[in-house]
Length: 157
Ligand code: FES
Image (cartoon, rainbow, N blue to C red; front, side, top):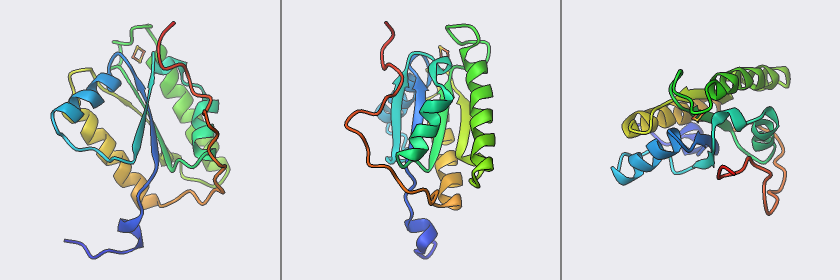
């Protein structure tokens, strides 16, 4: 086992915007199958990753996230056709914005899973958490969390 140091002691705060049709179900499956993924990964269910906008991602960093993952349906399988493709573009855009303010672009990541891929979801979540742990805290001054963060609607209308 590795000796404890500041890096291993750091527990990154990760927000995962998960599409209800796939990643959210995959996370649930990982949980019920007892496949571990980091407890510090906060899952926010959204109707489609196409509903995630750059403001939501950037706000997550403002409120203390060290990394933001957007998890959508497999490419070609989005229930709203191209939501996950738009989401990928937005995540890449946010990554570029992070770089502009002196943070690492790796702190924003898009992943794709199907509802049945619980183990794959856990693997992707663990990989991302490892990356963020290596990067360490953002160093941003964290805003106090509001009682309700203006996140995308959790349920479709
Ligand atoms: Fe899942 Fe669009 S419905 S990403």
